[in-house]
Image 1: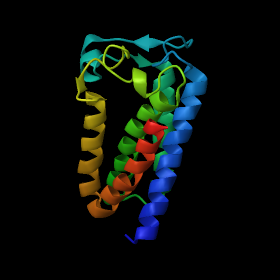
Image 2: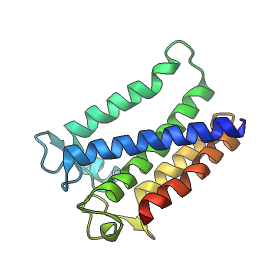
Image 3: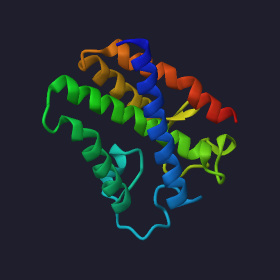
Length: 170
């Protein structure tokens, strides 16, 4: 993939993550994981183990379903397994970026409160980040490999690192 395309894709993906984070800051305010929203919650024991202790909420089920439908729209008439792998690689990457940006851009949290014990819905942490972020990154990288263009996808990820760090250090 030419570098101009890598940079454009990376900037666009980062824009999507920022917009999703800002939208959720407006919707949830200081109460993450739809804590105070008028939505249903499903907390089956097996689900909580699978999701690191996060209940499934109607809000998240609807938002994630909408995003997956939008991400897959380009594949509607031109489906291929490599394109599906790339789509899901981008989805997993944007998911953990948008979540991290929610904390950084949320006046109630910020970098100073991004730590174990301050965020009830992240029960397992590895170093400075929730275990979920590493799982999403790993899924994104595996799917990048399956997409047939692992170098392009990894380059897109690397271009976004300084953008995320700039948000963290603002």
